[in-house]
Image (cartoon, rainbow, N blue to C red):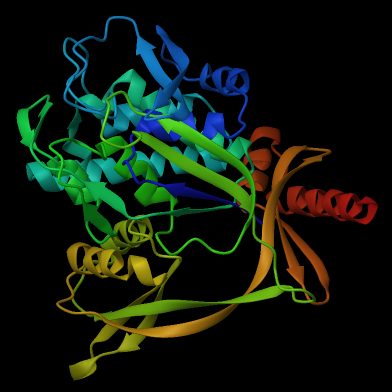
Length: 410
C-alpha cells in the first residue's frame, strides 16, 4: 500500500502542500492539464527552486491575474487578504469543482475539504455552512490549491495519508476581516481535536487552506514503518530561524509476510437518540464522517417508556475520537456519548481503475487469505447506467465479467 507522511515542522499552506507533492515526483505538466478542466481562467503556476536555511525546496504558487493584495504577514503565502475579487459561497465553489468532471475520488476529496472550511467559517461567524461567504479561500488560487492537492494524491497513487502535529505561532495576521490573532480563528476551528504544538514566533504557520486539507485527508497517528521511495519539499514565502518548508515522504507499507490482513486499534463511539427529526440523520452522518470517522451507522432500539429510538455509532482512529464526539454532540440532540477501544482485523486492499467494455470503472481489490476479490464501485456503474440507458443490473454484471477477465490475465 502506498502512503504519504506530511512532516509539518514549519507548518503548512495550500501551496506548500501542492509544492511538496510536485517535488516528490508528480509531473507539473500533468497536474496543469488536469486543473485546466476547472471553469476558472487567468491563473498560472509560478514555479522556482529556492533554498531555505540551506534546504532546497520547490516554491509553487498560483498567480492569478487581477488578484492583488497578497499578505506580507502570512509566511505560507496566499490564504489571506485578497481584495477586489468576487466572493463565493459554498454552492458556488462546489459548482466549479463539479464542472471539471474530475474522477469521483478527486471530486469527493476536494468537496470534503471545502465543506470542512465552510463548517469552520460558520462556527467562527455564527452562521450556517451554506450561508458562509468565502473571502480568501473562495478565490481562484485556493480552488487551484485544493483541487490540485486532491488531484496530486490521486495521480501519485497514494492510498493513505499521515500527518505530524501542526505548529501554532502567535501575534497577528491580516485577513479580509482585518487583523486577527495567529492562528486565524478559522484555522483554530479546523484544528479542534487535532494535535498541535506551539512555536514562540510571531508568525502564521498553518493557514486555513492548509489546515482544511490536512485535517480532511490525513490521519494524525504516528507514521507507520514504511519503505521510503520519494521525498518532496514545498516552500513557504517567508524566512524563519529554521527552514520554512513542508516535507512529504512517500513510500510503501507492506503486510506481514504470509498474511493478507493487519490488525489495528480503533475506538467505537455511540449515543442513544429518541427525540430527533429523522431527516437530520443524513446531515449528522455526513458531519461525523468529515470529523474523521472511518464508518458510521445506525441501529434501531427500544428506549425507555417504550419509545422507538436510534443508536448512532461510529468507528474512529484514536486521534480522531475527540473530533467525532464533538460532531455527534453538535449535530444531534443527544446530551452524551460513550466510547471504548476495539480491535479490528483489516484485509489489505487497493483501488485501481479498470478499462471495461463500457468505459473506465474504479475497482476495489481485496487481498483475502483465499485470494483476490474485486468489486466495482457502485457509483461508477450507476453513472454508466445513466449515460447509456442500460439497466443497472446489466451494467454491473457486464462490468464484473470484464473485471474477472482482467484479473485472470494479470
